[in-house]
Length: 91
Length: 225
Image 1 (cartoon, helix red, strand yellow):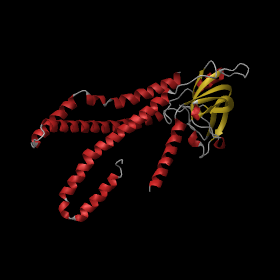
Image 2 (image 1 turned 60 degrees about the horizontal axis):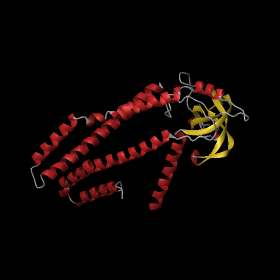
Image 3 (image 1 turned 180 degrees about the vertical axis):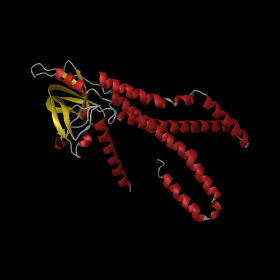
Image 4 (image 1 turned 30 degrees about the horizontal axis):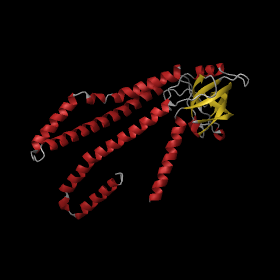
């Protein structure tokens, strides 16, 4: 019973963390893209071009390896639990 | 106001500090003198300080509790400085199972056997490092829970608390990360929304902007100064 509870609450916690970090990481990336646009086109008022630039940058980010790193949020705690369990129970 | 704030932080520090002091692993240098099993009837006062029945067995009102009786080297400063003198210390030995605190310990019987194997006399002492968490409070009859026993050559060993070091580093990193997340959320989501709101309802009159000002001021109290 305790094991089921650990898994359920662990999954809830890790999923919440996963979504929060995903949103944060995307937001930071978007800000960076906006700043880069402002640097490249200091006096451009063309909001459509800016939106397209940001969209493309975000699509590139989504397709890349970095967002997949956020999956570590699931892997690291699981490995920690297994490690602590093995260390306390078998050593 | 400033005074209340200070006291609130002191209170928070004491609560969080005691909690971590209770839950995090600590190492004692002890000499095991005997092991014991006593029957225990928990009360609502001290129930909180005990784990549950052994993994895979039923939880009843009353049950046996494994104890490890030791003579422990006294320490200063949360165990960082060793002293020459000793005092008696009793540890309980319970499974924490899959639940709290997260030690995932299932081997209390084996640990009891291991402790018994290291029983020694004052004449030829066998010192061991006892990893444990928890407190000994005599008024409530609660004991620290033993997690592991490791025989050592002498009483003057230095134990580096690797787990706690990594734990506190992780805590600091996590705190900084959460702060950065909150700031980003504020700057990119809350502030623009408030600005939009004020732009679209700006014509409705001063009472609205007054209200918005209040929300703004409330939010500003979250901003670090």
